[in-house]
Length: 153
Image (cartoon, rainbow, N blue to C red):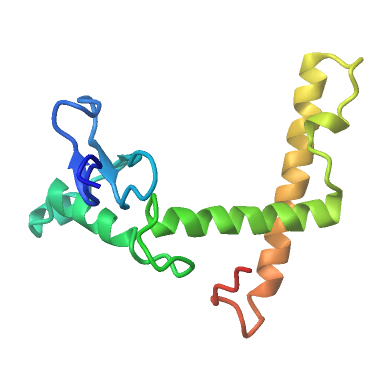
């Protein structure tokens, strides 16, 4: 469709926030409806990259290329593949936590009569307990031969 923004279009000058390095990238074809850009923020641009000649345009191009590497899709996806993989890892961790601690979220286990300060303390304790448990599970899995493989269903 000629009315759609072409895949690979980047907008960074005079559109994105001027206070830090960021850009909008349309990484996939607009099949139905309108093409939707993703807003990327460069958190740290290492001086060694700049010294080696890597510029902001190169970061934008690499980001666009990463959108083509998602193994579950035969076309480009809406945002960079590492973000999709991080989302899958978080989802897997959530399932582990729900299987061990139950499906209720932390806030729903708090009593309504306790003070806000007490609720905060209890919530922090539960988060720390769950984090310790999940980290121990991850540590134990280091000995498995399948560690490092991405087996997302």
